[in-house]
Length: 147
Length: 282
Image (cartoon, each protein chain N blue to C red):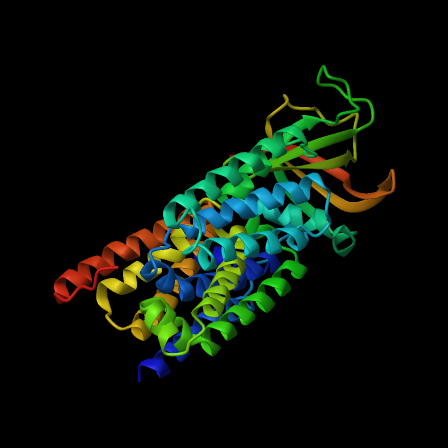
């Protein structure tokens, strides 16, 4: 009896994630919505995107993180290229991913203070720089996170 | 909460983490009983430090597949510690402690001197404590984990009786014709593979917990080798699954959450063991 129950329990535990994976988490207006995730999960998902960007090209994403001026930009908090960076750390702040955004309306977007938590929506594109494929989110809109 | 869980389960990396977590927990628990009974409870920490040291060397050498260096080095050290340990000048805990701190210090020093990353503290934190490693697995790493896990379980099942004999009385096993040295070698290789796999789940500093806790908990309520091994395997898988789900939903660190669940399970099993009256001491 012991072996039978052990086998059943083992099979159940191993197949549970796959069975539960068939469920739906509710509709969203974007393809990838990281605003509904905790920081660890946001970091994990954005890592997946950066590992295989080709799979996500053309998808719209909503990301939450901390506003940083893009390294090419003005250090006074203004920018010239319409490009911003979003820092997405894990819960402990141990690891962080930095994502590039190209703003849809650079002139009309008021930039927050560096380190402010913001929500950014953009469409993923890839580009090659120095032989390395990089990803960026274009046509982006940004607003301060509400919480 | 169920809705959030279902939402998270739509992401492949969450499913990868659950599958890999369950497999690593199963593998680590199988040999936990043997290691505890052979008084090698702390070998997990020693070997994981070795794996950490080897990983830093692979990083410094800019190797694309770190596993090609980490796995052989860890296996070699496991063989030296577990297989040749009985005849070596430095035995048991002294050898494990020396290798553990030596490899840890050497690895950290290398990372500082030859760091190729802009975020050294993140690399160290991630390797030592697992951090979000289990949530950032690639499909290649998942497949490798499945293959190695199947190999570990198959080796354990295939050599179960010999491992049992070598665990309880090595001298008697040798006298009855069992090649104890060869089976110690098998145990050493399996342990090394488990350690390298488990680094992704809980990080190198917490691996020992994954090996020891389920075995010790099972020993509180069961008395035979087989029943302890089976109970240990079920408990380990259940704790890993519970720890993973809690950390995914709550945003807590995966490794330490799994270890905390194991610690709670140990407390519960100790209580059950006391209530039952007959407690075997590991």
